[in-house]
Image (cartoon, rainbow, N blue to C red; front, side, top):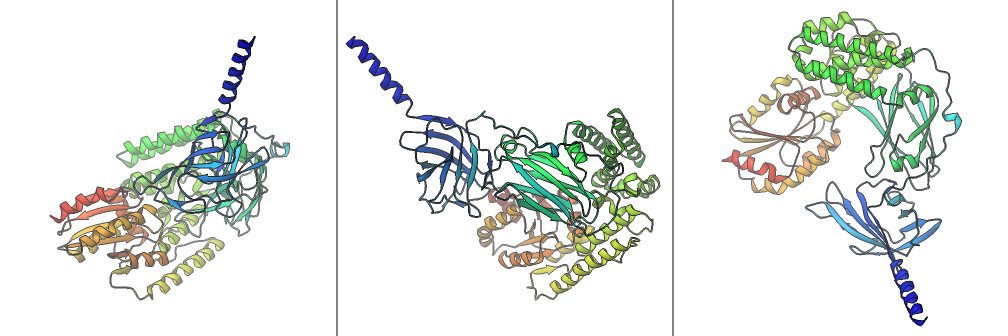
Length: 595
């Protein structure tokens, strides 16, 4: 009996010891604004809870966690007690070579049967928050979507009429499974015709009630793309909502879907074209159409050597969409969006077959064929117009589409630093908007040109030089010297990193016969550009958008930045690269050129 009691006591001791530590390996972080952080392990010990963190910054960055940071689990708070890598409240940087850092955070002990918890540094702006941390494989319950967000709303038979208006679009956001402090990030994208060189992006954050009211001017009916990225490995969520000036839509977000990334986080819609928006979001049939026909278009364009082949490709793509629409039983409303592909085919030609695209034969085909998306009374222009708008520059063909194209082409050229005659724009609203937008640009550029520029700073003083001649014109100024050309923009982090990394090496080369040329474009705000010209030694040129695009396409084949090229004293190209990649990548090429 005594022996049995001893064995029982030993077993109890072993079992109790085995329960002292519990470990979650690679737990999931549900929702956070700080995707650079991952948790490698959570250890539930008797005297503390330990979180093993890993952080990766795109550059050597500083970070810390405040002394008030806490874990919230099952309605209870567990305070932070320390870290193995830094003092709480004090900043520490990532490794200067790897830009990474591993560290541990210690908290008051939590129950070992904890199922899920949140980390909250505080409720101030920029505070670290990590929600729904749980073991890998544990799914969250999806919220029940109220019937009002799923109702089969009666749909207008007609596509939104194409009309211009400054009445704002309003999108209301509401959410399920929201926790205060999440500040969920949602990006809103639409085409701003007052700045047609790029999409307009607004970044919003849901408030502590999980709501937000977003308003913007679209000027005409168009898609607003709504995107929401999760933390961790998920693909995120996106929906294209067709909106028109003066209309309202309510979008319902489920934060547990965001956390699990199993489907679109946007789970319900009500209001303007709610049914269409939901159907546009659902299913693979849209993606299948996109994939199959864009692939067909790209293959046709890549293999075309004549305009006749491009025309045959165009007819094939349009026919395939008509068959696809009929086979899937799409309504007229659903089929409308596929007219975009007529234009998209032309846009792809403009991108990949520049000489054929600009030929009179192809221009005559487009003007005679007149894709429905160019000329219908109910067209909804897409940003693809921006690339093909030059087709109608200088023409007086009437219609909504040609008007819109001439407006875009004119505004784009003026904003890109070029002086042009006002194009023919029949629509009075669009004509007045053109005057307003270009007048403001002219006024600002005239003000900029009155700046007292340093001798090494050249602001649009070569704007009249043809794009194909701009590089040779500038290189001729530095004949007899080796030239390093750096094409960059003020908004490009890797461009700035390159400037910083090059600074000490440039100092070593100050007695060498080398010139550093820096080309930027109107996508870089003037004031920011001027700041960098004062801090980065070299010859700085602010090119027109047309000149910049020509050089990007013809030399590197990409509009991305940074881009570099090295030229011999006689102007011969010796080397070129896209992307920074560190000093070790380009330094040997500079040394070779200087020899």
